[in-house]
Image (cartoon, rainbow, N blue to C red; front, side, top):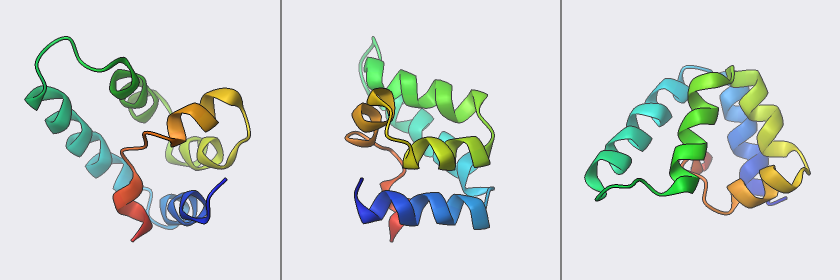
Length: 81
């Protein structure tokens, strides 16, 4: 896992409200794209809607195949700055 994902997870733990902003940003991206929405973006949106911030942070740091796959297209990279 890249260092950026560790930084993002740490920021989510410090500032859990960034998930709401991330959700809003992702919704804007999905709305700008022609339908149907990219399945990966929908999967990220489902995660951001259904999981609590600590769960999202844990997911970003996990080594599961799903986490590895989704990290490659993360809409949360802006949090790593």
